[in-house]
Length: 176
Image 1: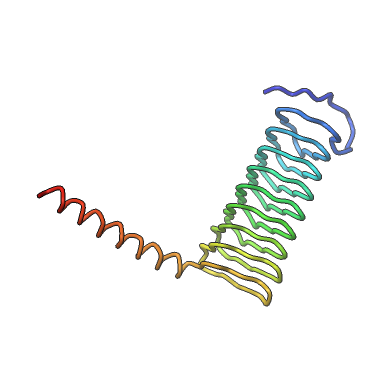
Image 2: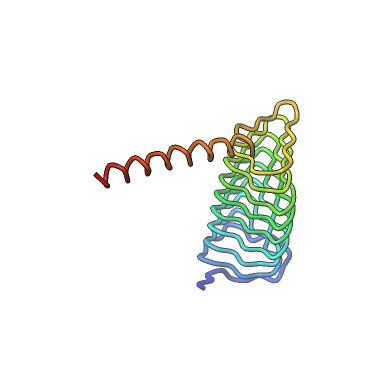
């Protein structure tokens, strides 16, 4: 892995750096562009990151990442990501994500997720989830869930019937 940064011995966050990769315990990234980060925990602020792989918690503020994988909790504030995976709870505040998978619960406030697969979802004021695949979905006033487990099951059933009927007709026509 190419690491073009000059390492500093301080607790200051890394500022205004562009690099292909970073492997560091407790990475604090600020105003930087990094391809991939492997760390124990990460704090990303005002940065663009391709992927973050952390054994513990990840916190993102005013930043974006294509892929975030946290072994612990994951927090996104005024930021976003493509796919987020959390080994613990996930919290989105004034941000947006594509796909969100969490072992724990998910809380969304003034933000959005296209799809959330988790143990429990709480959608607060200004929060929206396109598809919530969870056994427990709580929608507070001002929150929205477009498709829940029941609707997804019905759509899958109808889709399966349509495809099955299409294949049945196709085979019957081919047998003639």
